[in-house]
Length: 288
View (cartoon, rainbow, N blue to C red):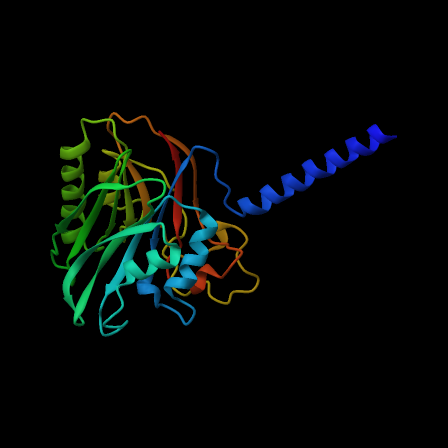
C-alpha cells in the first residue's frame, strides 16, 4: 500500500511539473539551445491608447527573446517627449540586464530623431561591434537606415525601408553588398530583420532571396487597425487582416543555421497585441 501511495505521489508530482513547465512556456514555447530573434515595428509605442514601452515589454517577455530588432523609434522628440529616449526606455522595461543600440534614420525630426534599434539580453551575449549604414531616400519622403550589431556568435541587423521602388531596391542592394562584404565569406550567422514595406512577390524581396533565406512565414504582419476590437478575435493567422511586409532573413554564407521555428505572433496572454502597434511581431528560433 505504501509503495502504491508513493508511486501515486510521484505521478502527481511529475504531472504537476509538466503542467507548470507548459504554463511557463506559454503560447510560443522555445526549444532548448535555440536562439530566438524577434522583429517588431513598434510604431513609436504610440499607435493606440494602450501602446507604451511597458505594455510592449510585457508582450515581449512572453516570447522570451534573445534579441529584438525594433523599427519606428523616436528619440527625444516633441511628439513623444523631449526627454524620452525610446530605445533606452524599452530596454529598461525589459529588465536591468538588457542592453540596446539606436540608429537614427531622420537625424532632425520634431526636435529629436527617428529611427531603428536593437535590444538584447546582455546576460546571454554582448555586442562586440555596432554600426549604422544610411540608405538612399530616392523619391520617397524619408531617409532610412540599417542598424547592425555584431555579437560574439552572430550578427543581427534592423531596418525599416521605404516602399517606393526608387528607395527600396537600392536599399536592399546596399544592405546585401555591405553585409556580404563583411560576413559573406565567414561562418558567423547574419540575420536581417525589419519592416520592408514590400510583399513577398515584390521584385526587391525576390532579389533578396538570391542572397538571403527568408526564415519567417508569409502572413499578415502589417495590420493597421483592421483587427482591433474584432469579435471573436482571430484564432489563426489566416484570419488576421493585413499584409506580409515584416521579415527575418539569414545571409547565405558559410554558417550552418538550423531553423527550429518561426511564427507571426497574433495572440498573447498578457495583453492585446493589436493594441500595441499596427504591426505584429515575428520571431525565428535558430540553432547554429
